[in-house]
Amino acid sequence: MTTAPWPYLDVHQSRTHEPTPYELKLAATLEEVFTKDGHELADVVRGLNARQVHAPDGAPWTEESFRTEMKRLGA
Amino acid sequence: MTPSTPLSTTACTAPSADDIYATGLRNQWHPVVPSRFVAPGAMRRVTVLGEQWLLFRRSDGALAMLADRCPHRGAPLSLGKHLGDRVACWYHGVEVGTDGTVSSVPGLPGCNLEGRKLVASLPVREVGGAVLAYFGDERHPEPVDLALPDPLTDPDADAFLCYAEWNVPWRYAVENLLDPMHGAFLHHESHTMYDGDTTAKFRIRETGRGYFFEKTDQRGVNFDWVELCRTGADWVDLSIPYPPSAGPGGPFGIVGMVCPVDRERTGVFFWRYRRVQDWQRDTWRFLYRTVIEERHWEVLEQDRVMLEAMPADADQRENLYQHDLGVVRLRRLYRAQAEQQAAAG
Image (cartoon, rainbow over all chains, first blue to last red; front, side):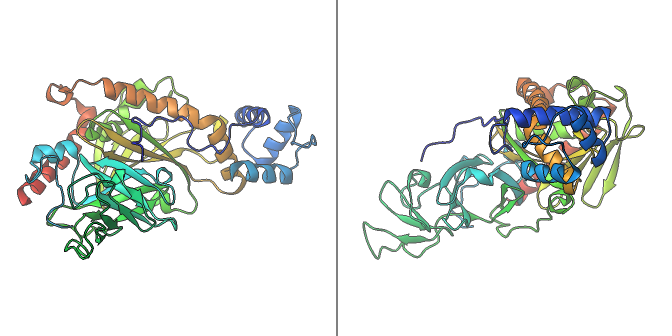
């Protein structure tokens, strides 16, 4: 057994993978939408679509597709 | 725990109040490392309260914590071999089970060491992704009741654990948490603690499990209050507002605990939690992983840099003022408990 190195200082402890360009763009846009458009689900879907940041299949977001995608990304 | 349990780094000597104050209080639970640090079928050597221990996880996930000392000649068991449900010392092959009982002495079968519980083993629990262990002294080997931090058991709260290792005495890390006013200065440039007054009056409010240290005239703006909870383990709870960019769900909370590693080193455990459900929960988790965790880390690094730079005699030459009431109270409480534990030993 090797001795664990000290100190353990790891910025990212919650990630399961390096974010993809799509995920980074979605996160940045969500922050902007939350800041400028509001916190309701309808605000979020409208804000993302207005900014042309679409779902992975290229289709505009619906409330249902946004919920499903967040469930996948936030699991 | 057997009488041979090492209670301090100086063998055969009961720890003094100064030792206990410096290396951590006994007779309570402390966090050790994140659970993920000990994979199924793996072992990990850890230092806690200045003592060497071995975390040992069976392939079915069951976890044990043994003194890292072979009962034969004192070699570190952590250098040995994982045999599934026991560990074999590398030096002479003596096998020790997860409860500390010698199961086999291969060099001399039938030897009177066999069947005897000669290695200290600690009660362990896993909570919110961290290993907690009970560190009793000789008079208190049975674990005290542990009431878990409410945010970690609340089904409506969702938490991420952040663990870090700092070169600071454990008490400095706790004192930092009982000092909300530093948020408005040290963390002024951060994404969550930029707002609020830089002057404040504080008060202490007693609770059945510890005390609140809180601003009298501002709440919900910065790091405005903290609750110290002593529920078998020591932990703090505090709340910090998120900016609108973090989405719905209100402020995030922190449950903080520390692991006293030795006189100079501390493991800090911060569970960042938020009361969110459904899509709001999923969205927060996504944003946390993608962008927020890194910003929180930068804030934590500000604490580490400041605390690691504090002189060794920092708490010997101070001029405290009203904002330090929470820290003063904490020190009195810990000092009194260290004196009690030393006297009882």
